[in-house]
Image (cartoon, rainbow, N blue to C red):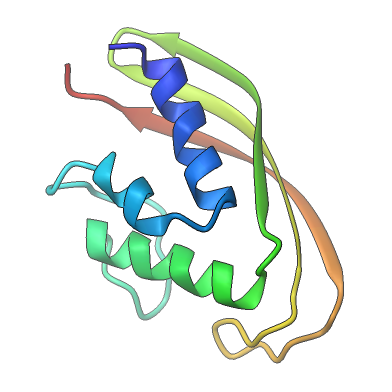
Length: 110
């Protein structure tokens, strides 16, 4: 299994708005280690999170700038951008464009 290609694919699917396709790549027992208020740290919770992101930021784009793999772990530096045209987690739509960088670490079962 090419973990780098799979990790890049996750961001392509999210950027395309294919949250179900993204979910197909996640294990049923997926655990999200970053707390999100009001959402469980499960596969269902992370899918709800990204559905919310896509609703609030319909032009959401995630670009895996750097991806490194070692064994069952893969790390990505991701450039994220989008324009908030909808409410998100109690924050009213601002119409503003935002850009952030993030680091994701994923563990894969072979």
